[in-house]
Image (cartoon, rainbow, N blue to C red; front, side):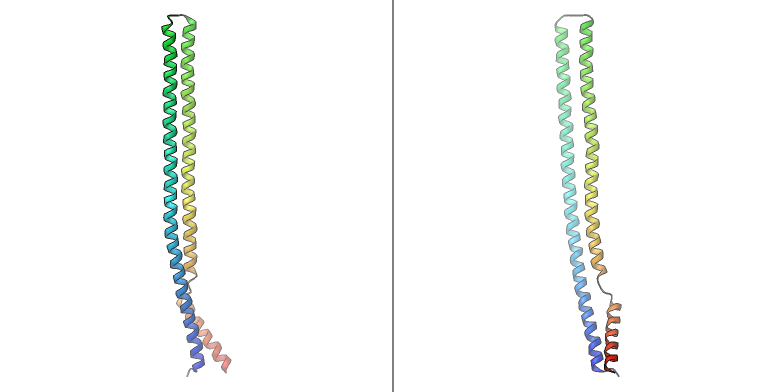
Length: 172
């Protein structure tokens, strides 16, 4: 028959283990909730950053389109002035060609600038995605770690049995 001291020792150990298990489950649930809130916040942050980047890109494209339009108007005005002067000849032809080259060079410069800006935009978008994934992975890792801290029922029962056995051995 089992002595009351052994039963009490095993029972207290089991109770303590179950209390620790319950506390660990609560802590893990709280960590999971923190993960849910944190991931939502990270998603919102990513979305806002990407929206701001998109608006910045659209604004840049619009501004550069206006710059090209203004330069085209300036070149057309200069060409009109040359035509209105009534002069003709090689120098006028050269001036027309030069104005055309200036316009072409300006448009190409703007195209290259927008292409570079677009590549930077893509890198910035990738950066927001990476930042989001890092936050999400860190939070997920914390949750997994919290759930791994929950002692199993088997280990609790084994601990209680070991405690009871130690008490039995100590009382003999």
